[in-house]
Image 1 (cartoon, rainbow, N blue to C red):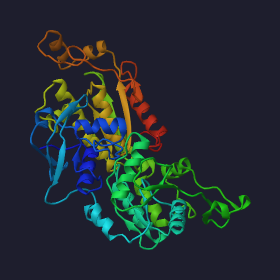
Image 2 (spheres, rainbow, N blue to C red):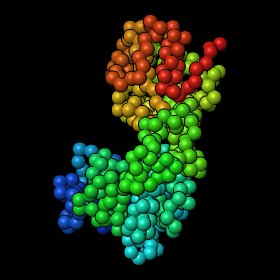
Image 3 (cartoon, rainbow, N blue to C red):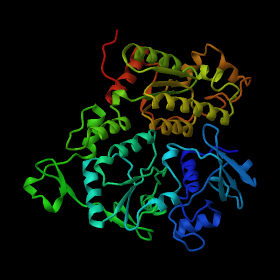
Image 4 (tube, rainbow, N blue to C red):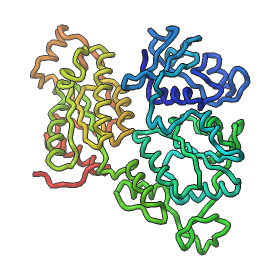
Length: 475
């Protein structure tokens, strides 16, 4: 049994839905090499992106591997016909067999691709794969293209990020502005690192669901559908979005840039009526609430005795007095007695400890709270993993409590450094185990030079500068 990473689980769902034809499962080593070098499968069929799964070596050679979601529900079984390995790890390869009950976000809105295709009207189908809400400008472009092509419109919202359901709801809120009969089917298609391969993969998914044409940012070679760039539309003096050729330059009015939209959303200001409808604006605010309404995580890292727990508790008290968010303290010692009970101090267990803390912090952040974490967190890879988890949900601040080792040893109330020095406490960070000094900390504090109030003040100032908390008068 194995629980794939979220992006891999999305690929599993798309494979099961028939959204990656002709693929029926994960690729073999030869197929992966062919796709990477030639963008073709072994049978010389065009395919843009390797679809693979990474699993632990101890299960990689099993004839069948059951895949489950994060809640433990069965999703599929891999018939592992040709396992292989590379520098990234071990990979099963072979077809997928679905579990009895399909799982996934908004599953009832996501029929198999074949069923969607069969239900579409004959003729031209314009596919659109939005990753953000459709506002008046984008809606005008879709209407114009649909009219020019005499096309049925197929909207496939790309569900990704911390609130995929809000994106889908924003598209549903736009239905009154879309051509009559528009088909809307969410797809869990995660963005790929290479923009060209990502665009081609989106084209393959659109074709699987029945699109003949695709609204695209540019031309696509070897695409299974015809890519069409969005027509230029402008806002006229009456606040209508019309084809640019029909509006004299003197009558056009400026739109709203991506940066301008982000500033309005960050501040909580209302979106103008000429930009979007009230229903779509409401869903946009769910996707992108004001900074002061979003959750955030502060991760203190440093040696034992550096002052992390003291600062974390003081920051918790400061936020609890003045900020509206619920504050959750995830202190290293407390977490080890509860969430991470049973873990030791090997490198692997230290990583598990920090990543478990990161998972909880990300969930607190996702729900609009403030998570304050104070583990030693000695490894860059683990701190970076926590940053990625939290960034998907809200704000993240890494604070390196850089109190010198000598001062940490002087404060050693528990006698831990003394035990480490005489060899009775192995794997002790800073003495017999490494501490990888952060080179990406948002703030560096030395508690041998700063008072507690001064250090906490620096953290609060940074949170204010980034817009996460409002100003207050300390009491």
